[in-house]
Image (cartoon, rainbow, N blue to C red):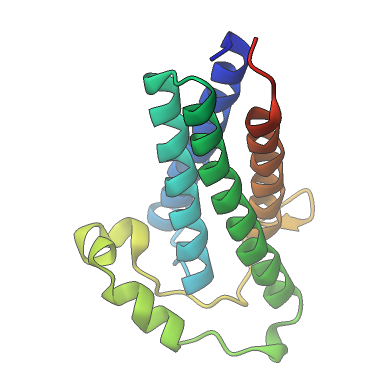
Length: 162
């Protein structure tokens, strides 16, 4: 794998790690509870970050690089869809009820939610937006990061071996 592709994988990992650390900071310090859609986005960040750091450590050839990039791209696209939906709910809170829902019950029953409840237990309201930066809410920034990671993953997927 070329050094440039390896830097892409490392960059994607750092985006995921930074996003997850900041999410936990907002939860523990600023008391923002994660909703089911937040937890789904966190799961996407974990899948992308794990695939990226394994790719950096493994340093695979063409097939492995494509496999890792494909997993990252699919998870980024799914995370982007969830983040876009979440952004819509923040702007139009009356259009959807996201309190105690089947999604929340499902996510909270997953083994990973019981193993690490701080990161993966959903307790918040999806339509609540109490944090903004540059007029964009958390799901907006998350959607931007997922799109960026999908583009980087797509480049790593389609780049020719040098």
